[in-house]
Length: 465
Image (cartoon, rainbow, N blue to C red):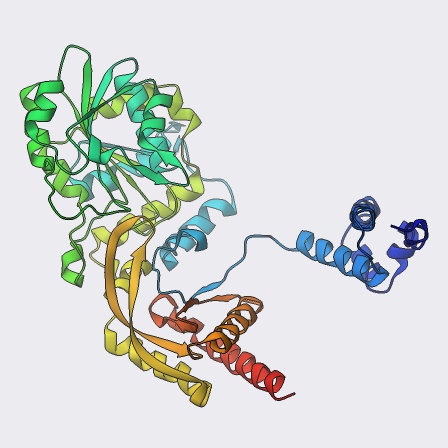
């Protein structure tokens, strides 16, 4: 480390006066610019102290990058060409046009969020969504919170605090990002009682565990993993029958939740909300942003007496859903009521898309880059903690070749596509870049084709130099 390196650092004023930085004065107040520049210079001093040389251009580039990041929202649209329909890292379910329009309308000005315009008195935000959910599922009542984990937490806190909830040992699962059912239950104040074994649980296991401290029986659907081989589990009908016989509510945490029969599309059977309600389950908990295909929400449907206990619990306000998501969820539910979900809800449009249509689009993409790409058979996944292991046949655009050199090409192409103005996200498998049209909206094809043409041409020029 040399003292002269510190002395050579530009001053704050010098950085502000640089032709690359000065235009930002039209966007940001002076104090914001000064703060960003000072932070950039502090990073440079830390780098020099660690023994690394830092140039003025590097400092300027860092300041400009930070100012660019501040100038536009960090959350931005991208194109999902991974073939994973419900990609958690990419925001899960894309919304229908009607849902987006409803959310925009709700955010444009004031609304009847908690106001009964006809009567001129205060209303309930739940009244905007409850009739739709009851009509769709056959439930007596419904309640919506901000996500499914919050719904389960509220349900357990309201119905089972300081009491026992019986769950199959094989269903004591982690729901993602290190959140586990035992942890959620502990936070609610309920006591988890595990019965059965990891692979086999029977009705008698629940029966033998019931005592005067039991508050509820609970089923947790393993929506993000599968146990195969020698297994046995209690059906929701059996559990509901036991609950009725012992006068105990049954809580059904379905996770993703589903209104349509997934087997029609060649997928494994996913528990349907309507079936659990019909079986006599007390409460069903599920997400709004997975197989329902709406905005993030935790949806609870079931018996009115139980829903009322949730409504009155203090935690209900802490986990309540906002007006914008309520508007989007309501518009999504209406698609199901009108029988148009497979035409309007993007998740179901993608799941139900014909293989021939996917192949036609894949061929058009591949032709853009000539011999650099080929169309191959592949599989799409539903993802998002739904239908684990289940896949849909698809056609993939494959670019590259196997081997160390092929892997480097695939990685370079993937990086170039991610750096587009609208980033395009594919996946690399066996050293080849794969792009799946199933999860790309048809109106995005032109953007994908243009990006492929440019990135492949750039890579060819780079390799020839």
